[in-house]
Image (tube, rainbow, N blue to C red; front, side):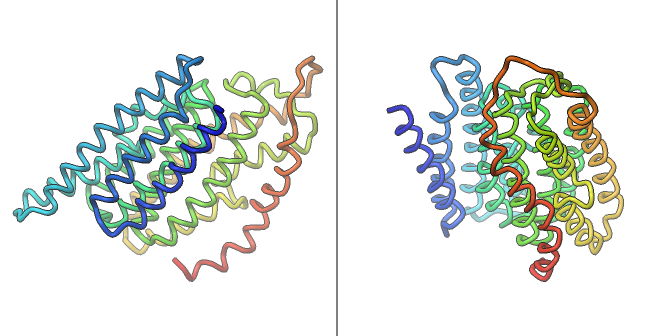
Length: 334
């Protein structure tokens, strides 16, 4: 019965997102976001786990505040207003969507919420829940001062805060914030560029978070004694981390390269340089996670892990590498 009720809310979650990004009315978009919120809360909460219940409540409160600000900005949008109110409306609209996605300086809730969730819910929160706010943000996004400040703060805060984290969920939360800075830059240049970035980021996130779930990895200290059965699995896991960090020649480097090349035409070279510097710090965090599994030998343990995931992981990892030869053919879309 529980599985059926979870599937029902998952279907509502998917359709509410699709309705939000395809609706011609701002009010229907807002209603769809609320349906999306009400459908994900039952997926997050668990009566037998106080941490999941706490995370779902935090998520609900933050999203409710952001939705209230968004609705108020949409009401102002339909009124005859002067330039000052128009600037305030644009600020409220952008800030509310940034809060929904968990971008700095509205990021305070995201690491704490993900810390209490399962890896499946973390994956939904880091990928699918970004689609609707990002698509709505594209209608009014441009590289103004507010956007640049949010990009810089997201890059800086996520990379520096992830250095002192020991929880894998919080590290992935700050990783999401860092990638959202790049996605915000890409969507301000071209929607097609954002789609390419988001698809590659989502695919890599699926591989990493499902690996964490199968191997029951929750803390960074567990990386120093990983119970991988095969050296190939350890290699693929490290490769995923490097791809997530954007290290060439992995496919995670391609969207960052496309974004950097596209932003160079805007003459914002200091912004590009700052983002690259903080991305290198984030890459160090990924390398710190992946190297222990390669440097230390396996120890025999009595624990038995489900390695069924490893049967289809090589296929997806193969896509991460061979995609380097396919993806450049889509550059004409950017």
